[in-house]
Image 1 (tube, rainbow, N blue to C red):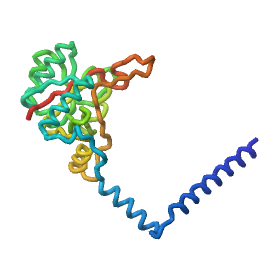
Image 2 (spheres, rainbow, N blue to C red):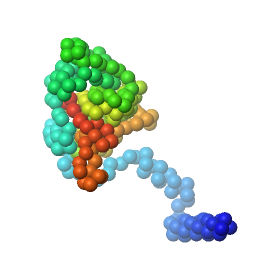
Image 3 (cartoon, rainbow, N blue to C red):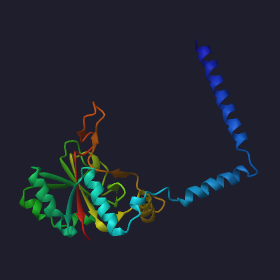
Image 4 (cartoon, rainbow, N blue to C red):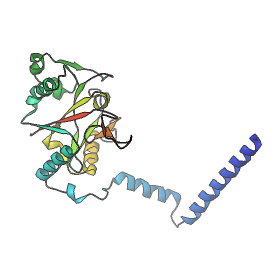
Length: 236
């Protein structure tokens, strides 16, 4: 039996080699392999835009409104704030309303330098650490918002580990109005401009809370991540 399996494997490898050889012959041109490889390299390095939907090719103000509409349709909760300084009070109000007494925060300077007295007044604990199983709520900053689909782009860092985005049941995310772009291509361009060729290890695209209808077509929230997504929208 082992000899039969070996013969079958050998024939399969030979057939595969024949197929690839035929493809190479069919693609044969006057250009050398080096030239073709350079053509591919140039195309990749150019990072040209793909086909962009018309709905994302809007003036900035309309992009903001589109983002808000699409995010809300995706079941995200939107809380509009005038400034970043209002974030602690907004968090305290939301957590108190939903009977949550702990908030696990990213340690970004943007967040850690805020006045968190509103949480103390409501006796809500605040931690800055990696998220753990059993955490109820987390707070992070987003890198950008994508109007096309109401999607948040977040990236990992030493100050904001990816676990904060997925383990807690409730995810609160700070998004600045000025960070919104029209389409995915613009979001990736912005990321490359910020980090160059050394991109963050993890980039997450989040559109609304986690959900699934895989089982008997019944919608279940929080299937693979937070049950609730709260966007703290800063109107800067």
